[in-house]
Every structure is written in structure tokens, then in C-alpha cells.
View 1 (cartoon, one colour):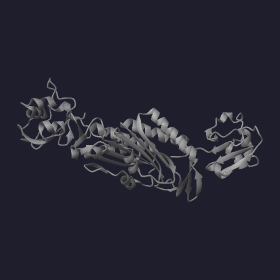
View 2 (cartoon, chains in turn green, brown, red, cyan; view 1 turned 180 degrees about the horizontal axis):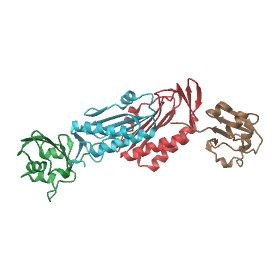
View 3 (cartoon, chains in turn yellow, orange, green, purple; view 1 turned 120 degrees about the horizontal axis):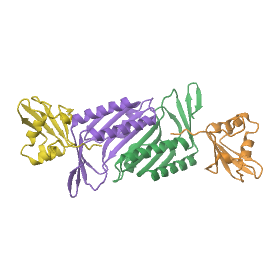
Length: 92
Length: 92
Length: 129
Length: 129
């Protein structure tokens, strides 16, 4: 299935502004994040601590709704989902 | 001696905007207030309670400086002094 | 700029004049004649003292908060519903002190600056307390 | 009006449009590009979500405070020192709620609206956190 990844600001510079990731049916959001950072240390370090936990400041949006970071291993994606990656916001 | 009285807003309507009061040398501010309200019940009621105390909301200025209301019986006026009478302010 | 005046003010122009490179936040307060069943109001001041008192309040605000600029324009004379009464514009490096400075000034202004307001309704007139 | 835009704003015009007869106070906050040793900044947003989030913050402000109008304009794109970044304009019957509403909105905006800022200095560039 195809998942759209949008990335912004610092994450845009690392992941590109928008791309489509092909992953296995029934994959979780955690699996998607593993997939898009596989073999790319800069990308991996941007999203994860050394111990593999999602960094505290990373904001994830699924189909324009904020995701509870505790649930990324349980959230099953479906074809056409859009995931947005936000670094810490700094408006105003 | 001559004392200038300036009155504002509601007090201007009662006392007139500005006038010169002739009072005895060495008079106190309290004596001046008695003098300008003598025989004028509206004026008297505007400045004083029934018991003769200065109303709580009356602001007195002597030569552009605010007067401590506790001291009106002790403040000795001198020729040319200017006393301003303010009702409660309502700017903004 | 501290002004007690019959003239209306232009907030755009004032903001443009006040901006400096060290300013990150400007907070403005505008007081407006509200329709409380009135037809118009009349504002009167003891002009000279009102300006002095506003200058003193400005100086207090500068002493209390790390702000960069303060402008206060208070109108007097005949005003009608929707007219501007007062503008307070405070510029600062950061937002917190801009808000605090602006609120401080309007609170003190209402307590002690010799300006008075008379409301005219269809039934008559009354001094506001 | 909620807007995330490249365009600058005119606060005079907005104030004039927003005034109603029941409004006694308007408070505005303007955020400005401050010189922190920078040459320029670039602002980026997730446009659609930023607008939705600002609308949600506006609705929260209306629910929390007895305010009459809320406008939020946030600029994106290339800005230089002294340029306006954001305008928040809140109109209310009385000053307290106008101040509180305006402060509430800027605090929430900084916490959660997807807008990012990159600073360019003579030594390089950095994303602001």
C-alpha cells in the first residue's frame, strides 16, 4: 500500500517535502517510521533517540489529526493515509 | 489674598470653570472650601458629607499637586495659589 | 508621545514610526465609545495635569517593565459611538512585557488621570463615575 | 478572519472593519522580526493545518472569554528585520477580556500552530526551536 509522507521545516530538509512510501498492508505507523529512516542515519537521528524511542519534540499527524505518540506501535495504516512530520513549532 | 479656583466636569457645572476667591490672609484650604460653598447648598453637597467631612471621591489639587485630604485644615494658602477641584476621574 | 487631544489617531503610522530593530512585540489597546444606550459622549480634561500624569505613568511603566517604547493618545471633546477614545501602544523585545506594560498603563490611566466623561442619552445626560 | 499568508497586513483597516457599537476595547498584538544578530528569516507553514489550528484557537478564545471579534493573520515566506510576523486583534465590550483573549491566542499559537522559522545570520542558518 502507498502512504504519503509530508515533512516540514528541518524535517523537510531531511526527508524532502513530500514522498510516497510503499509498505506492506497492515503496517503500523512505527513500522512506517522505521521504513523511511532505514539506512539513513541523519533521518533516523532526527526522529529517534539513541535508544530507539521517538524524540520528545517530534509531532506526527495522520490524515491531518495529531497522533498520540504512545500509540504509534498500535496505529495500523491503510492505503492512501497521509503522515505529516513536524519538528517543534516556532510561529508567532 | 486671591486664590484661583478651577473646577472640572460635574464640579465645573456647579462652581464654574474658573474663578478668583478673595479670602483672608493665612486662611487654610478648609476655610477656602467653606467660603466657596457658603450659602450654596448644591455646592456644599457636592464637596461635603452631611456631617461636614469632605466627600471621599473629591480630589483637590494645590498648584498642580494632589493634596492629602487629611491635611486640608492645616494647609495654609498664600496669595496666588491655584486650587483645582476634581470629581472622580473617568478616562480611558 | 503623550498627547491629550481632539484629534483622532492613526495606529499604522504610529507603529511604523516606533519600530526599531530590537523590538519583537507591540501591544496596543484602543478604547472605543461603546453603545450603552447613549447617543454621544463628551470628554473633558485638566489638560496640563492629564499630560503630566500620563508622563508619570509612562515613566513608571518604563521602570517596572523592560519595554522600549510607550505612546499614549487620549482624545477629548465630543465623540460618538465607535469613535476612538484612547490608544496605548507599547513596544518591547518580547510579548510578555509588552502586554504587561500596556495593561499597567490603562489601569493607572483609569485610576488617576484627570479626564472625565459625560454621557448623553435620549433621556438626558450623566457624568460617568 | 484567520489567514496564513505572504501578504502584509493593515491594522487600521482591520480595526475599522471590526468595530461594532457593542465594542469598547480592542487589543492587538503584533509580532515583529527582531534583530537577534540575524539578516533575515524564512517562515514555513503546513498551511491547511495551520489555518485549522488557528480557527480552533479562535473558537477556544470565544468559548473562554466574552469577546466579540478575533482576527489572526500570520505571515509566511521571507521576512527581514522590522517586518510584521503576526497580528492578533481582539475586540470586546471591556478591556480585561480583550487583553486576556489576545494573550490566550498568542500563547496557544506559539505552542501548537504548525509554523516554523529559520534564521539566516552571516554565519549560516538555523531553525528556531
